Image (cartoon, rainbow, N blue to C red; front, side, top):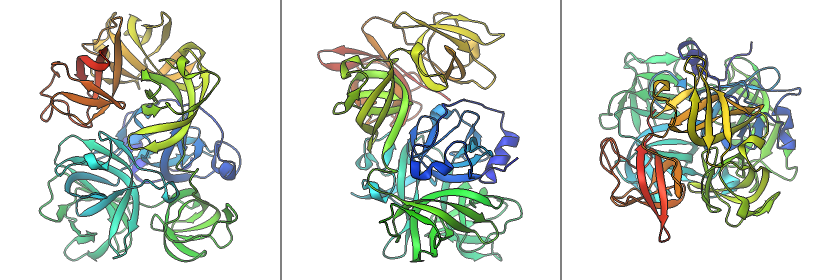
Length: 555
């Protein structure tokens, strides 16, 4: 069996409970990169890239079948843990492994930085001595997405953020990250930093990542058998607060493209360019002298965003490229999302697969903007604009959940009408009067409660794979305190722009309306803050959206 992309994934498979969520299948959507899509010959054993869409998993414009994939998150300190596929976001950095047919077997979400913001400017923020910029230029790579913020300008000193991004070097030779996703995180002591090792000193057990000094101490180093050295790309975790610019490492992971020789897919900005036979991408040496370059008129140079396939030599850390696709304004920055409408407020505010969509200026096919509603299944193409996707085209695939394509991931909300705790079988009634049945298996993830909290009459939202008119392999959000009342909309998602009187959810300003938030106050402590996941009951009053109930979504 082929190994996973990075050594972290096999460890997670050994220590984490098996978690299987199914996605929708499909072939490659970029013809020029069809050889690395689902099935066919020439499939890679591993890939690293940026999530640019959903409908299966779309990484750098290429669709990969994730029907049998296991998803893991490395966002927190310690070993990677299982995560629902529905938690994957646009801009996430993903490390993938494939079977011989090109199907994803494991997917690891792995951010570059987690820590407190120490400085902000008009164009960047600083975390752990490292500058982080937002990208709005599609030709330079995926445009930056935000979660918990509306834009870079909303980030404040002291905020704890999670950053996914591309390592670059500025004109003074200093490393920085061009973010693909910036997410606000709850306050905590642990930090995470990635970069290229310099000033390695085996004698005193330390090295530098940019301006930060990392002390090794008794830190666990993976993969086993690989020694630290200058020039290696690493990720460092620490369970403690840094002392000035000194980080005491708890875990150090050396990031190598694959544990074995084989075909890989790699995306990122070109650096250290000398010629087509000598440059780097993600700290990997690349020889593209014999590669097919697409488009044929494109040239290679520093800072150009490319998607490369080729044969990887582990010992030399070198990729012999067979194809190089140079990013243009339409790809891979263009976003493609297949999914079921949820959290519908208007054509300018609804979600697909958790992605906020603004379709107010989109061209529609198969239906009209007036037919948008919760439960409709759509294919949307557009571009990222801060914390939403501005849709250019919207195609209706189905108008009700029961008409959704087999093998697709859907999210439905309603009230539990039947549940068997022994078998996990359930039925829920939806707002349109129809029902949905399925099974909650051993791998089901519950939020805001557990299976023990499921009772008839409980409002829920459920996400999972739809096959033969049934849901399976799900994430269940128990909407405590919410009720199915005529005129009341149910919304969920990640909040931003939180004040004492209002907040934003899915691009809509919602007034608190005096509603208390269980677990704490409006901001700070155990209450709601930017980046919090919430369930909200909303009523439209005098043209304003007023909350009637708010609850935090726990893990």
